[in-house]
Image (cartoon, one colour):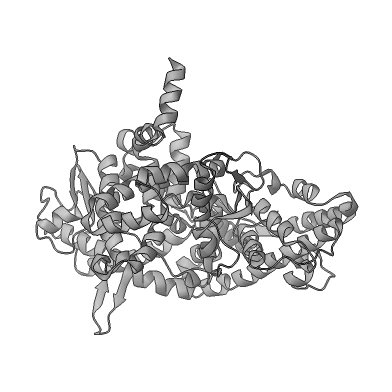
Length: 604
């Protein structure tokens, strides 16, 4: 199976072309053996070229189109043979893709650190060997992925299908299932909030100064003005190929080059192979003076906001002890992700007319272990736990359910402390808040009848890697398990909705429609309605009939594993509810003042 998932209103799987399928009679060699005597520059070119393909609706998703582009006339016969083998394999009903982000990034990182060697392969020979080397990487990927299926079988019966999907895709889903324009817009909005926070919070001002000094920018606005032009080609790129940034000669040439060179990987950099952390941190490489190539568009766009935290974390270690922030990850999660981002976004989608409290307001009322955000509209109560967390890269890349269950359980369900006590995390915190509401012990808002209200528990995440099919099912499974304990306590849980994993990006991106068109709790109802799989009772006349039924049920179950972020995007698109978030309208003039004024002047 592959990381290439087609997510419309349903989830379907594809498979990537392995070496053994394309070359069934050939003994597989290593990547190095195939590419010995090849130009390093050509290999890097090819990797960056593949990484320039669109992740949705690429013309190269058509294998005939790709093979025709990749192979020259001399290799026509081989290209046709490979195409025929793919078609033969696809008769089994699974779509085969050739290029996948994981293999392309692996190829790039592997050869970036190698020295240039004398070229001994002719062009036609290089093409064949390059193709074979790439398929070796594909086979290595599916080999790693092969642990997903058996490990998912160890989960509870009702989780087996969701966990198979999740384990197979989680390590790579964030690099293949995304909308680059949406990522750009949400990164931009979050970056503005972040820089305003860094500027206004006394603990973070020295961090901001160190950050701006490193990039030789007088203000964060100037920093963004330097960075944003580098991200525009990544989202505007119509041509499916690698993208070069050319710094124009002139008085700002050296300054422009110096800025990009702080964001590019150097040949002597130690590359961290786990989840491509090095190329995420520095997503450009130098082709020649003044010309820099984008390694992967997504990583460039994520520099706008996501990359800033990692830089701040590293800068923090270099500050004098008195200025250093202790436990910077939890400080950032509490002070920025929750108290700025979560609060602002919830305020934007539930305006003043609703009953709403931030976690800080509830804490000031001396309500212990309160939710991070509380909203009530009539009989609908939304309980939000905001969690900005990351799983260690080596664990993320494991494809192993047992690893994921342990890691996510510790971070999101509960953690057993050395003294044997249980520390509640998001899932149990939500359960405790629900218990309090159902026992009428929530003093901030007592004006409801516990049997009348619908309660919507929400886990608010801060990274799109958790928008992977199956993730919501795992977290809700733990939630339902804990909810059953409330039944034993005699509490009325019939109107408690399933737990929803909601990415903050989807709220930021869709905030206008959520504020003016359809509320978040109404969207959550539609979402859970869409996920239901109805099993009809049937009498089977034969084993074959039963097997067919089970296969259809599994396909149906798989198709329903769509993450909320993708569900809301499709829904808003279909119903014409999406509008540009207001902050982007405000910010364009402020950041691009000169360009904006020139445009406005040309209109008049």
